[in-house]
Amino acid sequence: MSMEYDVLVVGAGIQGAGVAEALTAAGYRVAILEQEAVASGTSSRSSKLIHGGLRYLESGQFSLVYECLKERKWLLAHKPDLVHMVPFLIPVYRHSKRAPWKVRLGLSIYALLAGLLNPYSRFKALNISDWEELDGLNSDDLLAVYRYYDAQTDDAALTHEVIRNAQRAGAELICPGSLVGAEVTDKFVRADYFSEGQLGTLHCKALVNCTGPWIEETNSKCSPGAKLPSLELVAGTHIQVPLKLANKIFYVEAEDGRAIFVMPWQGETLVGTTERPYRGAPGEVTPTLEEKAYLLRTLKQYFPETRPLQLHELSDSFAGLRVLPHSASSPFARSRETMICSNNPKQPRVVAVAGGKLTSYRATARQVAKILKPLLDAPDQPPLPEANIHADREASTEERNL
Image 1: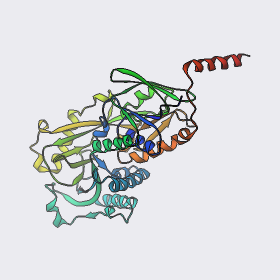
Image 2 (image 1 turned 90 degrees about the vertical axis):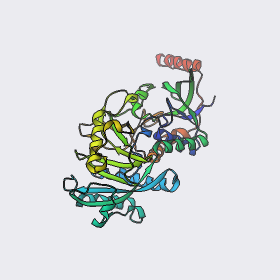
Image 3 (image 1 turned 180 degrees about the horizontal axis):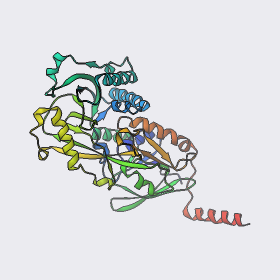
Image 4 (image 1 turned 30 degrees about the horizontal axis):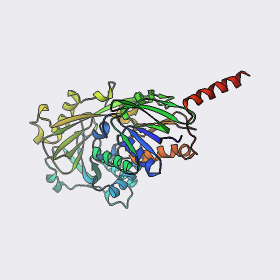
């Protein structure tokens, strides 16, 4: 009996979508198991940006920024209907934590990593005469304004598009469907799942856990599971206000020095994000009153016309969860590199993807495909019927006793 699938991907957020797309493009048989809906979790609650991550330069994550900028270039070329460049403005004030020279240095490194021949790698300091065109930005004690370019997207729409690509290449989406348990044998993985009121079973060579903030829960259902590092969930909140401030994105400092984006979204303005440790159920994360007030204060500090706004007048607010390595340091300073773990490096039947950026989903998928390739390209070894498995185990026991 041949295996039903080569790989079962659990989770249909951007990471699971990307892994399924890469594996089907390589000719493998893939099933995707999603418990709620495509992009129902963090993949629809991000900052909607395709970017290198200018702020990650402060924590020395140069390889991550370089990788993301390469992926940004590809996405701009191949998905222009979903990913487009937008001007970003960084105002620097007398009270700013980052002085003008430091911002210029960061932008110079960012441009270098993006490639000096890339027309979008250029940045400039705006002339004082141009400050009147800053769409209502507070100019009190303003020292400098820098303009550079990065990209914006609809995160949920991008995830749906990647899932459709995988399906067009042959992937089967089981949604809604939740993993009940997975057992690893020498020859295959047996995965039991629940969908549409019924229990189902499938066999595959490998299972890839792309369930985001549910990664540890999903991993606990696998026997054996991947060897995960110590992880922490960090919540990030955005608010949406019923005003359109500009067709550009402002990159400002909050009262505690954190970088906050103020950006156009759905004809209004989106402001985010925060970072706070989260220890509840992933499906129950919501913005706190303190987070919403913090973001609204930041908006009012930089855009005086928004000062009459009250919390009850927000158009929307939402919170998503990041998966970060556990550390005593602040979430802001922690690595954003994707963590790819397995149950056995020599024969990885269960692979888990922890963390990861929206921008670099393709790079993550390539890494997973590379890890699985030796296993997937090995000749098929048909799974034994349950009776034969037990018989083999009994025979082995008898041989050991002789």
